[in-house]
Length: 221
Image (tube, rainbow, N blue to C red; front, side, top):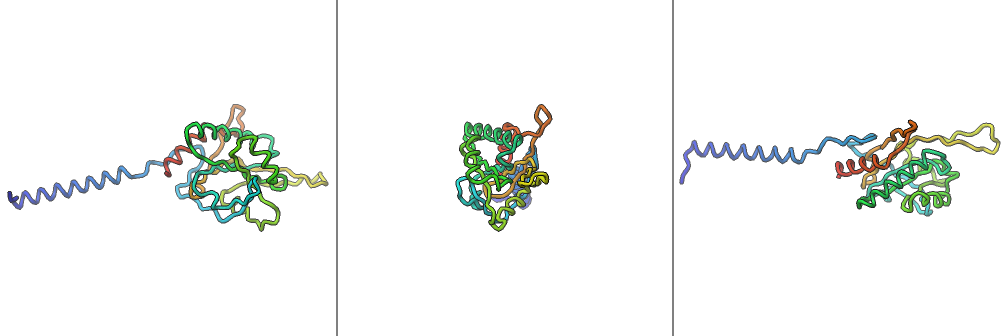
């Protein structure tokens, strides 16, 4: 059957509009969802870390390439810290247990801001107290400041304050309280912040970190 010019025009109009609707529907279905709400700061454009070189608690070099292939969560502090460091690591151990129960993977790193005291040997005895899979990171004097790109790339805030009344050169360590989430490309993807515990002290909660990690992982893929 031969269509009249008017029928052909109508058919063409219908086909054109159908194609438009199909394309529009595809765009809507594949549009990224709104960024998830987390307890911290999400970086829509992940931040590359400059080349760095550290030392893990197994006396092995730890560089940018060691961050590739899986998600990492970086905590920082020092092993003689009396409060926020051990409580944070305890929560991260609880987080690892929950992740394992649900077949999820996340590697936890602890970076020491007190490398003079926190040698690889010290970290090797400290990290397993919390979890066997935790990796402690430090550096040695004379490393040509190859640790600084790691600190600066993440935004690690720490300061060693000398005790002027102590002739033996003791010092106090002051540092920030944040966690850094790195994506499988070794880039900084989010900065997680602590909440407040019942005593109104800054503290991380394993359940909150777990929820935020899944939201971020699913959002960024």
